[in-house]
Amino acid sequence: MKPFTKEKQKTILIATFDQRTRQLLTDQLSDHMNRLCFVTRGSHVLMEILEQEVDILLLDVDMQGIIGIEILPIIRKLRPRLPVILITQDFTAQIRKVAAEQGLTFQTNKPGSTIEMKTIVSATEKIIEKREMHQLAG
Image 1 (tube, rainbow, N blue to C red):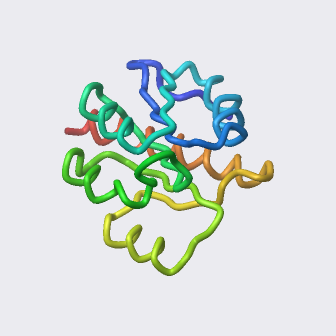
Image 2 (spheres, rainbow, N blue to C red):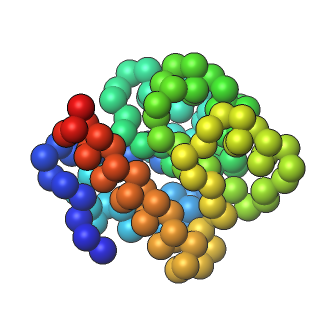
């Protein structure tokens, strides 16, 4: 995997209650020398995006308190341009509907295999690179 641009360290907020998902994402994304932040509660996601400059949010539907899908409308009001990757084991019709309404950047299955993990890491890299190019052009 190619490393992200090192001009500015990127902050990746990983919001999941699932320890296995957290560990898999940490193992893959920490190689890129980005700043990884972790939360397990929906309310803590909101506090983190208010208190620091988060470059991308990996949001698991499985959270303590307010679940990931329920806080999406609030996240969009607070940070409308924040890229969000939604991670879930179950793409129900309701989850797909809310995801479409809230303009999610990417949706994927919870990493249970190497292919799913590579999909998440690849999407994260592409989103960060696209944001960097947009910032340089703007």
